[in-house]
Structure formats: structure tokens, C-alpha cells
Length: 525
Image (cartoon, rainbow, N blue to C red; front, side, top):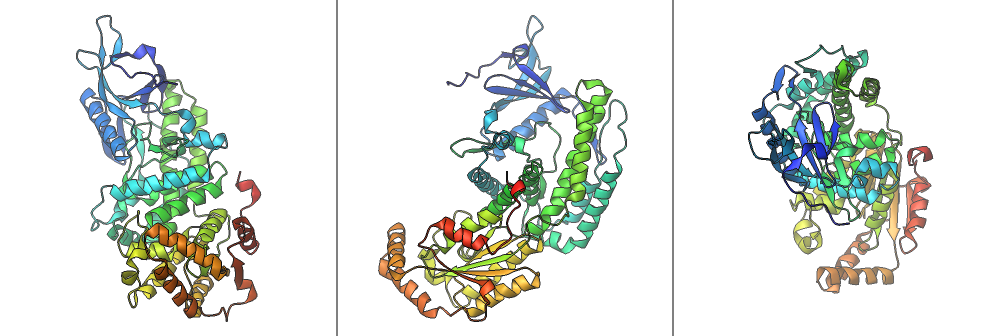
């Protein structure tokens, strides 16, 4: 169907009107006009005054900038709301503005993640696309001064109170709000060094601030659009990127798809090469749930004062979110384990590692991706073979494995399983991975992938054609690794699994899963 023409001026009365707590939406078949309500808000002592027309225009311009940064492709500009000669309100009309609106292209509701989930159309590939898009946005985002201390900013977010200055005084927050706040403040103090280290590594960036399922759209071609929050609340966007990841994952888990939540987190960690976010997930889940609960509580107060919306449902939502904030430091539902995937070059072990990681909701910490990251090749890296001499300089391989195991340890620290993808050609490398599992009290499984020489030769030919190099160069590498391979002596039968990767992928995955804890069926849709 042909998209409706987006022409101005547009009569406000001809559009469907939707009222929210802080904004008013006027929707047509292919467009939306968002008008901020003339409110004065106080957020933790700071006054946000939107009572003036000029200030609401500034707020529209600020949100338009957010949409550009999110690469949503929906913003059509900021337009005036005026009155015509008959006294009818029009968007983009002539005359003095009585208000301002953000003009946006209306995205298909069927593409929204919550709709896809409800209709069982949300696939893992959709979440992978969202993860890559978000990682790219974060990678380009404005950074907070790495010398700034993040602790006070986080404490302010934990303590924040949100109130409307005009109108009846809001009701007191429930007791669970105080308990969640106390846990968050204790966590900040206990993990001060980790938080400061994250700040020094420039992971405090300008993110979305409210990345719910309703703000993410994925079309059937895998194109992703992220929309700013429809409520129009001032958001704490300058925080750790983990906040956005935790926010979206919580939305999936809250709809009984914990498996998809963990898949999304893993996909983001791999796309951004940021596995250090794992120990921060539960804290940011709690902090984000508390903030949403406080907003829902405020909206319930406004509805109760007579704005025509259902105050009871908003109050129930607030209680649910406060309960979620308290439950954030819960024990993960899937017991953690360490799966080390090893074997020769060009035998399909990385494909198997990715597959099993998806099946158990675990991130794959790969030696190749880690090597690329250490060589500063960025998110789009994929040509590590072409720089073999540099990447495999004396001592560099040990540094790569040290970083791989450190990253895997951060995942385990959060209580989640991890898959490590590397050659693991020496007994010492396998034992280091095994000791990592022992340190966290988790089971260990070394999966040794293998194929016949003829199958390997065929795969080497495919790689050589892909990379435009002589197959003999690849064969020399393969022969060297084969001659250096050490037997699996020192591992018990329960810790070692030998698989032929020439057989169907599903058969090998089933053999691995038989050795590991898996998701309860009622948590995976």
C-alpha cells in the first residue's frame, strides 16, 4: 500500500488524539505530532519548567536531536501549532504559535517489539539486529568525562523523587521503593572501584535512557528504529551503556521470555565486545525499574486527580515495577557453566560455539574477536587472518587468552553461563579455563571439535577464496596447529566431549546440551 502523503498544515481535529502523562499525541495514517504538556516538574530538586511555549519548543528540538542520534529515521522536524481564521488548531499553519510539536513519521505498529513478542513473531535474529544497532549507536555516542566520578550521579538517580509542581501533592511512595533504594545505594558503595573503572574505560555515554520494547521497531528486512520515550520525561541518558541493555532485557524477562532476554544481552556483549557489563546488569535492572515505577506512581496520582485515565492500573504497574527492582539481585534461573570450545583451524568450531551459546543464552567470548579488539580493529573487524604475523607475535597469544579468560570471568561473576571459543591446543590453556570454572564453583566442559583432513582441506579452500589468499598459506597454518596439538590428558570423561563437526549441527548441539543445564520449558515461550 502506498504511504500517505505527509503534507502541512494539518488540522489537529482530523487526527486521532492519545493522551499520556506528560505529552499528547496526534496520529494520522503515516505521521504523528507530539505535543508536550505545559507542566513544571521537579526531579530530585531540579526544576524542569515546560509551562512556557518557547521552552516546549526547545524540548521538541532536544528530542529531535535524540532521534537523529538514535538513527531512527522518523523525525520530520519541529512544527508550530497555530490557530486559523476559524479558530481551528493546525500543525504547520501560519500565524503566531500557540504551541510546538515534534513531527514524526509513524512506524508500523506490527514492527514494534512488544507486538512481535505478543504475536510470537519476535525471532532471535531480530534481537541480534537490535543488539548490533544499539552497540553501533553507543559506539558513536557522546562520552562522559572519564575523570568524572560516577558514584554521586548514580546515587542521585537512586534517590530521585519526581513530582509535578502544579496541582495536588502526590501520595507517598510505597515501602518497597525505600527498600529498593537502600539496596541500590549499598551496591554502589560496595562496587565503587568497578564503577570508577568502567568510567575510565569510557562506557559512560549518552544512551537512550528508557529503552522499552515499545520503543524498538524491527521490520521484516531486519531494519531497526529506536524511538525516544513517548512520555517526554527528561531522562538520565548520560549513564553506563549497561542501563540501556538492562532496560530492554528486563522488558523481555517481564513477559516471561528470560531466554530471549539473555540472548539479547549476549548478542550486545559480543557486538560491543563489552563483557564487563555483566556484573552491572542486576544493578541497572533495579535502578531502571525503580525509575519507571516512580514515573508510573506519579502518573497514577495525576490520573486520580481527574485526567481521565485509569489510576488503578497505573498504581498496579508501579507496584509490579518496584517488586522487580527488589528482585533484581535474584539468582539467575539457568545455572552457570563454562563451555570451552577448541579444535583445529577451519573445522567449524566457531559455528558450533555460536549455536550452543544461543541455545543456553550464553555469550561467546572468542579468541579471534578478542584479538581483533586488542588490535583496535573495531566492531566491524573480520580480517584477523590477513594480519596473522602481527596478531601472533611472540607473547601476544598469551595476552589474548588472558583477556578471554578475564572476560569469561566477568560473565561468571554475574552467575551466568559462558562459552569460550578458541583453539585450546595446549593442555595448559585448557587447565586455565578449567581453573576458572573451579574458582566460581561451576561445571566445566571442554568440547573438542574435529573433522577429517579431507573435509578440513575443503574448508581451507573456501577460506582462501574468501580472503583472496593462497590456500597453501592456510594449509601451512593448519599443519602447524595440528603438529602443536596436545592430547586432552588431565580431563575426566565428564569434562571432555569429542565431536565430529562434519555431522549435522543439531546433532552436535544436542550432545553438548545433554551435558549442560538448559532452560525450563515454561520460560522459553
